[in-house]
Every structure is written in C-alpha cells, then in structure tokens.
Length: 212
Image (cartoon, rainbow, N blue to C red):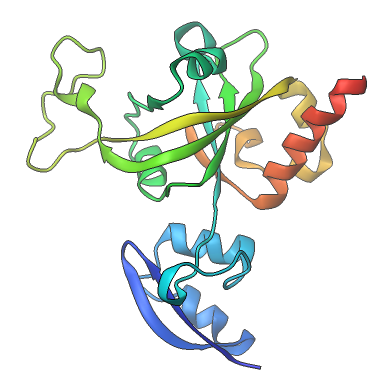
C-alpha cells in the first residue's frame, strides 16, 4: 500500500507516493542529499516517526575521532558540550554538514595506544562555520577561508554515555563490522557515517565487556 508522506531536509522537500517500486528512483533524485539517502537507507521512510506537519524525523549514526591527549571523551564530559573544531578534510566536512541535531556518534580515541571506542556523543547543534579557521593564533587557521563563504564547519556535540573501551584490534575481530568505513584499509577520515547495525554492534560489544 502506498503511503503519502512529506519528506523534508535542508536541501530536499517534496511530497509523493512512496512505494517499493519508486524507492530506487527516489534515492537517485539530484536534490536527495547524502544525509537524506543515508537516513532513508538505514531506517526506511518514516520508521522513526514523523515530526511537525508530517515531516519524517530520522536519526543518523556517525563516528568522530579525537586524540585523547588533546581532547578525549572525559574532556567532553567535563565541558558538557564542545564545538568539533579543526576538521580540514572536505569529505569529513561534508559529512558534518549532513549532521542534524539529535544524531548520535561513536567517540573514538585516535592516535592512542591502543586507539579505540571510548563513548557515545550526540549532536546538539548542526553545522556552522568553525571559528578557528579565522583565528591567526589557532593551529587550524586558514588564511584562504573567506568569512563571507567559510570553507570549514563544525558541529556542537555533547556526551551521551561513556563506554567500556573497545580497541581497534577488537573491532577487527567482529564479523559484522567487516565493511565498516573505520576498518577500511587506508581510511584516515576523522568523521564518517555508520550504519545503524554498525553503531549497535559497537555499543553492544562495549556493553558486553562489563562481565568480561
């Protein structure tokens, strides 16, 4: 049975009949952003319910990397919220631009011995210009970034809950994560999407370590 829904995102708004027969063409719509496609692929249309005026509200999952000696999960807990600054890779920046308030992310400690999963954080404010790009005293300063058309963004995150630490070597042993971007050879992105399954597998693995 077709279901009529209104689906809206920051760059995508239309109303049409949704059915299995037109889902593939819908996902190829030019204005259907990565964020919209990923939320659709992970959750299906309206699986998590509707917002105001029938708009679909979906929660995406992400992974954010930070060096613990610079800013670790405990620092986020202490600060309560923080702008995720310093991202200077275009693909990672674009992923942040796709983030929405309410999305959840794995907080991953990188360049550590060993690196691994430390906690869960949530996006409390969507993408906006990263102020460090305009600060000459910041190591993230970018003299070529135009204030009228900023090159780099950040999102604001807050702690959700700390997890039992799961190292990268442990994650590599989990078969359900075989296709996870985090474990892909040569992947050095500090920001990346996760599927719902990948997110839940990581969290479940960490929770099960309580009794180990």
